[in-house]
Length: 118
Image 1 (cartoon, rainbow, N blue to C red):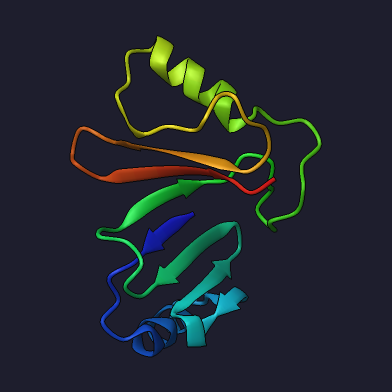
Image 2 (tube, helix red, strand yellow):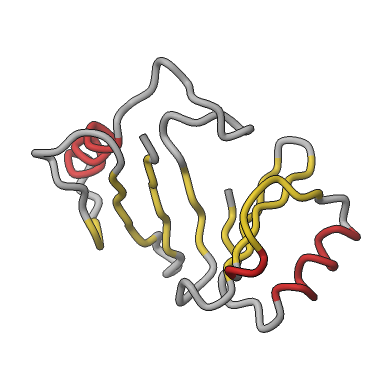
């Protein structure tokens, strides 16, 4: 999912992406966040929640945000990234299980969020 956080007017952004064929998938526009989908492409609009646009990955979910039985836990992903020498900007607590997230930044300064909800 691509997250576009700095929408000055989430209603205008929603209308724009709907013209591109995106339809409502989830979220609450009154809380300044919604998720839109077009085919297999998913975009999250978050007004005032994040500093920059970011890529988001959700281990344990498919394109419909439905549970996948077999997936790599975010902590396993974290271990792999560290083994590859990738610097993380926020880490999941490896002593826990269930929901957790980590963040990193690509070489161009784009933030990436790996956000596990279960």
